[in-house]
Length: 417
Image (cartoon, rainbow, N blue to C red):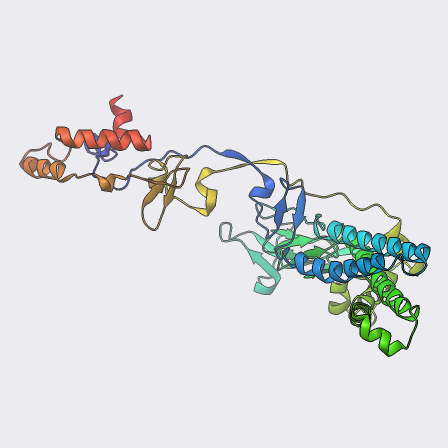
């Protein structure tokens, strides 16, 4: 019986599955490379964007197009009328445009306040006598561990409920929420802004306020001085407007845009004065009940403008270990771990191996093993027929070529050594 069990692990060239219990060695990678959220990273994880970061191109076009057109229009008319005045207008427009782009970049490219995920469930703080599905969260691996779906915390003397996040496996801190687009829990979550392609949270909210405020000022600036450029020209207004189409287009565009960015700026100034987030304003309606976070109008503005921006809770450039079995989203069973070398990738659907360069690696199926099967059939009458494997010289040559191409040794080769 011991001979039978030991020979079950022997592998012949005609085998399609290699039985092995060896595990791949873990390799070290940067945290941003294995991050489970939907973020996009640039420059080795130094810049953190949201899932819809591509919307920045549209936002940049909507802001930069009219602003650059206004600066070019002013530059061309510098020598025609009052050069000093036109120089001042041009410099003011260029400064506002630069600040606006800078605040847009700082809002969209930094960590908004992502809360680190837990790799396992937190320990239960106390056993629950009442078993209710809406009040507990049960782990399939530990069915006896029961966690309340929500629990109470005290904030400024007020009782606030915090919710357990099934995705991040943690109780969200007060004012935190899970963004379904970026798939992260964010501290002091305000909203996910599609125009900047990023969540707005504790770490980028001040820059977001500066972005929408500078956008409003830029719209008003371009709108006002486009009118000034028309009124400073001699002649009838309608005749001047018919010849200066650029100024007319800028006036119409900025008039429409200022209602959007201006309204958004006024709304967020109200939120700052009452110390609310957009999420809290739409969900909890603090105007109808007491707000546990407000400290008065002056103190609320001081909290945003004078307090230090909290540091990031996650170092996306830190080194973490990752099993090779999970690289590239591929999963292999225990049987296949001994067969697939770490330098190859195994296609589970087709049973094909690919090298690092993406080229297909010849498999055992490519070998002609009819001779081996015939020898096994001839030996069927003997007791050791099932354990002896013979191959002719041609088969040995093909098998040697296969090993030289793949660099994979079967357990049989290791056993013979």
